[in-house]
Image (tube, rainbow, N blue to C red):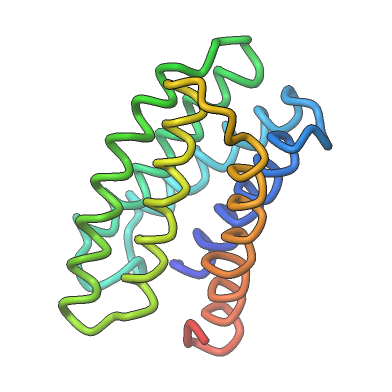
Length: 164
């Protein structure tokens, strides 16, 4: 189930990156954000296979899902994104905490993924809530992390049973 979640989140990262870079419109990507939020929440709460720590896995997936629900509102309903920016600051702290945890238990890939997601959400906070001119960096971070931290390990989990 973790592979499934990673691949879906990868779709969102890639499409959000393309939108931030001005390559797509927001409404269709907003719909994707909303749909993936629902699908990964169902996966998180049906739980099996998301990891040995059921509540911890559900929480981590839910952090992503809530970002996507808010992004749905930003892209499709025209909200300004400042609230999403502040949520991203909180998510940065959560991802750093998970990163430290995973590194501490020897799950290096998961630890590094969480640190990468923390960097992305910190940049998103700076762009959305603080108005910093880092949109291009944010777009490229989304695209790079879509492949390195999500699609590649997700497909590997689905097809080979390992992250790499």
